[in-house]
Length: 68
Image (cartoon, rainbow, N blue to C red; front, top):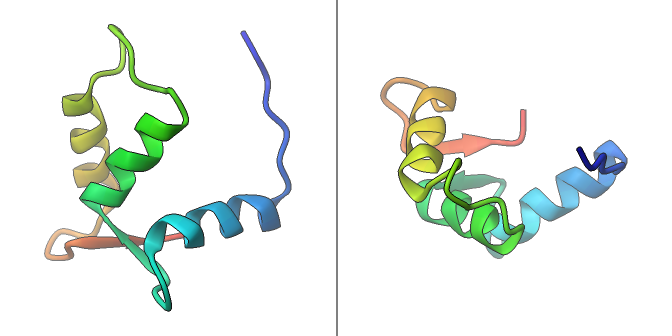
């Protein structure tokens, strides 16, 4: 297993980069792009899995997620 080390500030900056200009929350499309760009998708983690993860993380009526 490979361990990645990143400070919370680095993680928050990456999150903000994928949110878009002037936004502090992310939609499902940006979340999927983040997973794809990080090369997380393979036979064990599919695009459908990423969509399901996004759905579980967001608030029930929300369409976007925040860093917290």
